[in-house]
Image 1 (cartoon, rainbow, N blue to C red):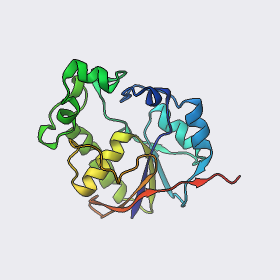
Image 2 (cartoon, rainbow, N blue to C red):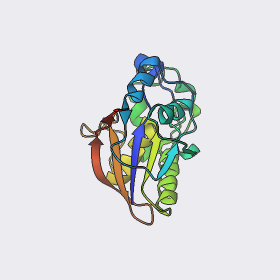
Image 3 (cartoon, rainbow, N blue to C red):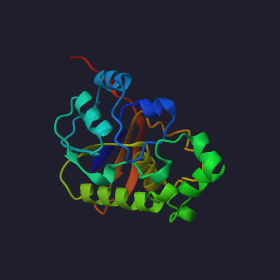
Length: 197
């Protein structure tokens, strides 16, 4: 089976470079307009979404219908880092803050008392395993961290390094799932279709 993962539309905090995490920020007016002009280029027999507002608004703007809300699709909990910019985090916690947070060798590190990368990977892997047991392909509306985690599970990328240039999180990440939830890349950077109605 296949699952398409896509990130929610833009928010004001995205535009300002602020870490959102579990902070429940809505889509910006520009984000709503952008997502309302797009459609998925395929059918979606099963639909899942993060329960955070920005993901639910993206489901609605894309005209996808009712989604099963699953907390495992929520963004990584960044704890005390939420609301801060990268520069503010570097100034507070050092220039290697994100390397420590993303490193597969340091998966117990919880940035600002939040959630570790290991915990994020575990919940995304559990979600993929459960989805693989169901019938039909699926779509999941999620967050940057979830797409990065899914990409990591499919490729073995070390999240401590800069995000791979071939991963465009403004597009659709399409994975093939084995029955046990093991993921591999089916298509990177699949384009949305323009709305025609």
